[in-house]
Length: 145
Image (cartoon, rainbow, N blue to C red; front, side):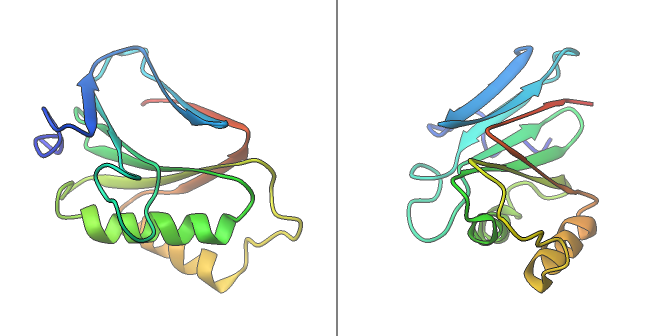
């Protein structure tokens, strides 16, 4: 199970609650209506204390799907750096997981950066883990499969 490294860890909460919410001015909500076993890990300042890192890691333990979550002001490219570094540092702890990135911004960057080389490389990295990138402003809500 991909959550073994996080059960009973001081930085994580593992349970099967119906709604998982992480927030810091911006908010990410993962609806877990089928009550799958999920670990929510505080990465920034707990699991990783130095260098670039994302805010949270949420793992659907039953399906082996990980969500790296960054709650950011407006610096979308730096959010990608933070998640990339977190993936590099934690990939051995969640080996075999599908990896998704979720970025919640205060506002979307003015120019559309979807063809920016750094973003294309990041999306390719996620596809290598069968994952994807989703971003939104203020509050991103999704349903756990």
